[in-house]
Amino acid sequence: MTTKLLSTMRRSVLVAVVAGMASMTGVAGAQAQSRPAVVFGVVNTDRILQDSLAAKGVRLEREKYAQTYQTQIKDEEAKLRAEDQELSSQRSVMAPEVFQQRAQTFQQKLADFQNQVRDKQERLDFSFQQAMQEIGNTIISVSQEIAKQQGITAVAAHNQLLFFDPGMDITQPVLERLNQRLGAVKFQDPATLQAPQAAPAAGAAAPVVGGAAAKAKAK
Image (tube, rainbow, N blue to C red; front, side):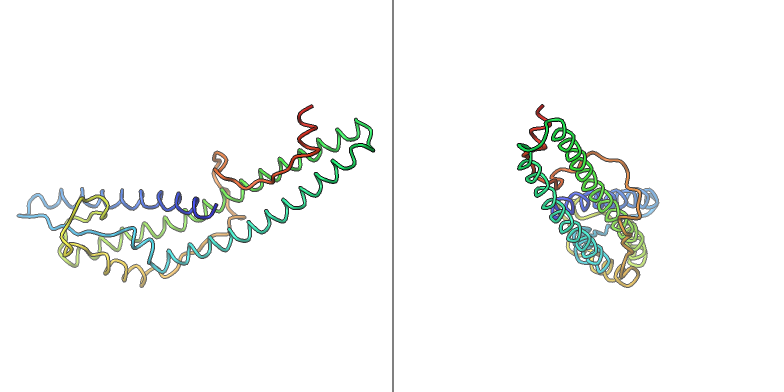
C-alpha cells in the first residue's frame, strides 16, 4: 500500500513542479526576446524530491503514520475474523431470525471498518500531498533565484528535455539552497484534515471474512 500510494502522490507533485518550470521558461523566454540569446538552466526535480531534507522528512512522517495504520488494521481484521468464526459456530444453536439479525449487524460493522480504512488512506494521501506541494513551490522559487544570480533566462525540468549539456544543470545549487531554506515541512496529522471525497483507493486493506456474514448476505 505504502509504495503504490507514495508513487502516485510523488507523480502528482512532479507534475506540478514541471508545470511551474514550464511557466518559468515561457515567461523568461518572452522577456528574453530583446536579448541576443536565451540562457537555459536545467533542474533535476526527481533528484531534489528524492534527496532534499524536507522531502526525506515528509516521507519518513508518512511512513510512520502508514505503519501505525497497518498495525491497527491488522488488529481489527483479526477481531473481525474471530467474531465471524464465532458467529458461524453458533449458527446451529440459534433461531434463524436471531442468527440473521446478528449476521446483518456484523455485516454493518464490516462495512464501517472498510470505510474507516479508506478514510485513513485518503487523509494520509492528502497530508502527504500538501507537504510535498510546499516543497514543490519552494523548488520553483529557489530555481528562479539561482537562475537570476547566474544570468539564466529560462529554466526547465530535466525530464522536459531529450538531452542537454551538463553545464546547464543547476540542480546542486538549487538543492543546497532548498535545504537551507526549507529543512523540514510540517506534516499535518491526517486525523485533523478534511480529506476531499475520492474513489476507494486501489488495494485498500480490508478484512477477509466469510462464514456467517457471507451466508447471511447470500440469503
